[in-house]
Image 1: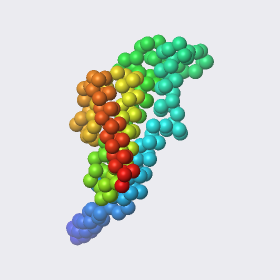
Image 2: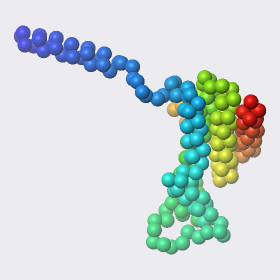
Image 3: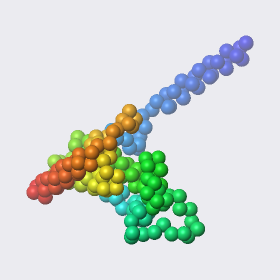
Image 4: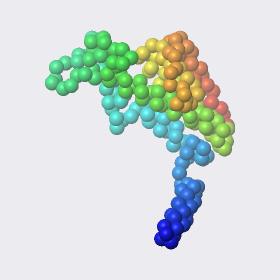
Length: 203
């Protein structure tokens, strides 16, 4: 009986010590709450947004869909190389549907990933402790990136879901906006981008 009591006390003490250890504040971990606090962080974030427009190391994400899209015109042919052509077939044979996009799915996903990232950056940088001139520069560049992504999406897919704020898990069923609304947002973003960057150059 004594052994059982001792074991229970030892386990209780061990559990308490583990709880204290687990609940200690993490150090050296970046989150949305503690990022965007310095010029370097905002610059790095904005540079990554721009890099995502090229993705040179993942050519299949943006380049392959463009090549696939050309296969639905007289400029390219799917060919017969013996390779798996499943990713090319929807575009080349005019069979694209929401659940059968082939390679076109990757460019759609990549641009919305960048749009969400741009929205997060714009919201966080607006309240960051940077100077107005610094905010103008990075927010202007982020607006341009968002406009570019929507321009590609509306040209490839017509009307697409349009949002200018960061989304959560409860915002996964957005309706498609009209192509006219998407183009209007692109124009707004480009004008705002030019205005923000012009403010930076005037300071």
